[in-house]
Image 1 (cartoon, rainbow, N blue to C red):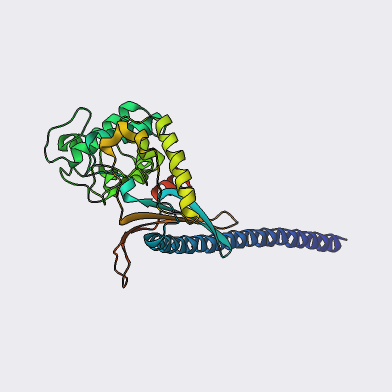
Image 2: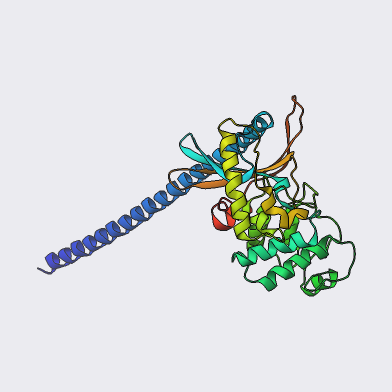
Length: 323
């Protein structure tokens, strides 16, 4: 009897071991399956991201093709509006913006720089008017050749006090990205400001035919009502143009007369092309290129700058709203 009971206990103990081993193997198998699902999803995300980047790359060159066509017969408008096109399994969104329609960080007068920052504050894209005024002053101190600090501005001593690795350049901005080094400009502020400024025109004025709403609102003397009436007329003129008409005519330019000293119609040779690629699953990627048209049939354009991302797109995961 004792031998039989001992044998039964041994069998019971062995059964418990087998059951625990089964549970352990089940846990290991489930963990492995979950790990494989995660790795498969990560791999799929990488593939989708790469596909979205490829669509954005294609969008840049589609935008360049539109610019080259615009030389002879304007069709795409270069005021930053979005053009959406299907491409492969996804879609591309392209924006063309003339650099002459932006505020030049080096050439623009003080009032235009201040007007742009004030406009961003009034629309809530910057926290308040005081911060906008400080950033405008810091931008002007960055580009002027002296060490005199403007009211609310920043020169070398202020940068040292803020433990900044750089001081004011006291010279021209070499790129829009240099705004990141200006005291008071953080990543969010840069994302709000960068789309509307340039270093490629060196113009003291902006072109009202390509300037987006945000830039026109920066012009001293122009209010939202005047700007919107002008943009409505400009849109109507461009609508006829894209349907095969001639260069826009009979625009009520007189509406803009209060800000006339800051405006000048001009033909641009330098453009920003923004392209966004998107897949049905939600993967998105952005590209930006600054393009100069050369007028040379053998090499009709040059890429002045290329960015693998769009700062404001990365900051908000979408491109800015159409002007």
